[in-house]
Length: 361
Image 1 (cartoon, rainbow, N blue to C red):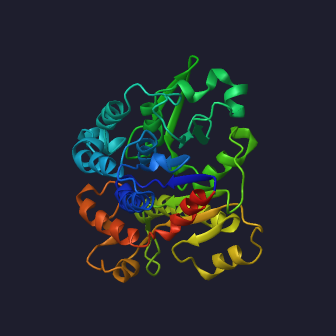
Image 2 (image 1 turned 90 degrees about the horizontal axis):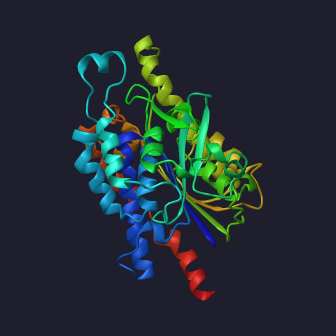
């Protein structure tokens, strides 16, 4: 394989789950390559993320270790990232003030733009352009069609921290982020409100479509896509007990989860799925029956359904899944436990084939 893509879902504080998985990936790669200082930017050629996944992706792309990013979340989640707005504001507008998150992102990524040489991999960030009601796919590729045809609106010179604020502006949690380009103001909200909360297949398109300028080759021996989730909350109805309050919460959560599942399905259809959590029989026939041949990439997916049944299967029956919301900072220890359970699925053989093929080349 000649190119590797890493994709990280959105999910608020549940990004802690993804970090436990990434820690295991990093540990295996360090052992395989006999390099205790290896970071994921040394292995992956493109890293993509949405919302909290965009923060993790950016940290990894600039060479942070997974342990450093775990510290970023554990030290800042409760008092800085999820710092409540004053009462009147939180009741009428957004639950949390963006000041702490903005300050933290500024401090971490300082004056970096997408052109900064400290960004060691291709980077893809997903946000939603609320001004025009469309996804905003941000890339570091200077050869993309958009960068050439619309240089005045090119995002390569925008501050990285501001782009991350845009990607993490979850409606009702954080206020939108306004970015002024060439005198025109654009308003952005969380990338999870697009179809790409799971950006894995979009990252594949960025890497291979001529419009984005990278033009990477396809094939299971040419391209690896590793997709890491943050846990999928179940909103299945019990009986017919529903209400406006239930629907206001459940419908957006369900739509985001279904969009993420659909992106996974696309990856399983177009790629050779070497590992992934079980999917329902109907979807499985969609990937097995009229699936694309030959496959365009090798695919790994690490995720977990946050249901009582699935948690019990991995020895975590004591965790109440309904508490695992995007801002559940008080559940961070349980989220780590869930992440470690998912990380047990990561095998050295998932990555060894690529390394061995390079050594023998």
